[in-house]
Length: 506
Figure: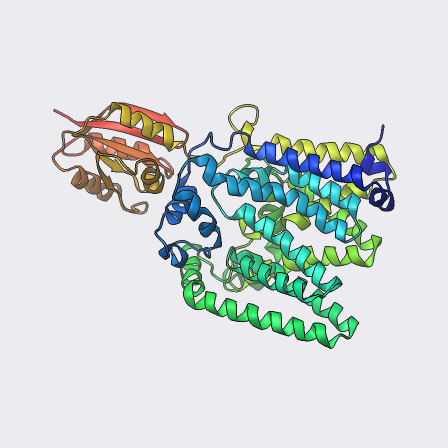
């Protein structure tokens, strides 16, 4: 038995609009349900907690935060929620909504291009995407990034087709919102812009050219304002923290070009298909790479429109490699999420290209869907042994501390636990000392900081998460043999988080 998508032509799908709409709404509903399933089960980890703390900044200071490396739109969306609650469900809900809405929007975009069958398949893979589901359950701007990437694709297509003043205003606003949400979206714009100006040139429309110039003047002024207010600061911090040395300096021009395939395979293909996994070897990545190359070939043979879509993806990938090559922006992973919808479009094209062989198309589609389900984060602790998610269960550890602590106890918060501890212990009556970021210090200096913080207290709690290497064991061993020495008399361990009760040795 063949499926609806395999047996119907694009024109047939267009005619069966009600049936198609039902399929897409079902996929969108499935996407929302999967993303909401277990959304609040895990604690905030380090990056999430920092984002929560930023959203708790008072108004209007929340708009001008330069801590971190991202513009303000996402935290402004969180701001009204955070004033009411810091519960995981509510602060992760926007990510889930943006991620689920991206499923429908991916179909809508391709349907505009008269590619409804490709749109259905792309929506299906977006719905079950493991990386999309992971970021849908995290307080981060990455689900919003994918949603805005699709809005950019839709807005550019609409303005090039219709060119009304309303469409130009919407395009301008979408670009500005994208730039004020996530800097990585900027690398998608050159390919879209080049295509747009080419279509305007073909139309020989003076009015559209004036609209193009006017929109870009406004966008340019907005970017200048963004640069002056925070982008320059972010760039300096980002370059330092990420050690973005130009690749043409180290390892050099030729070596950098030779690395491109490995960087693309690990930075894009592997991350988009099975993020945070420890799958041995590159054979899975090579399989998916073969599929997107096959999908690219299929679309290049299909029509002029689909050839442009292939150019969008590979052109943006080349641009991303170039800006990494000169040391401006990191390559791959979450930094390349702007091309994620195009990536799944190419996977869908690989399946669509086999439609003359329905059994092969069905088999490949099931393999792709199954591989994504296999890497869903929900299964990290049960049937899936391959994931190493950045999860840190400080919430139950803090709950245990609160149950066992005495009023006179002092708490020393390990530097990596600081943000999450602040979120979960905003009203704690316990004396609390937050440690400095002493990751690179010698052990004796780390121990001296802790001993100075706890002073003459006969016992104290050490709260840890975002633990670096074996630092928990090193600190406990060091405190046991220090002068004065401390003996662990109670502990609670969770996923990459723990609390330890230490008493001064007699």
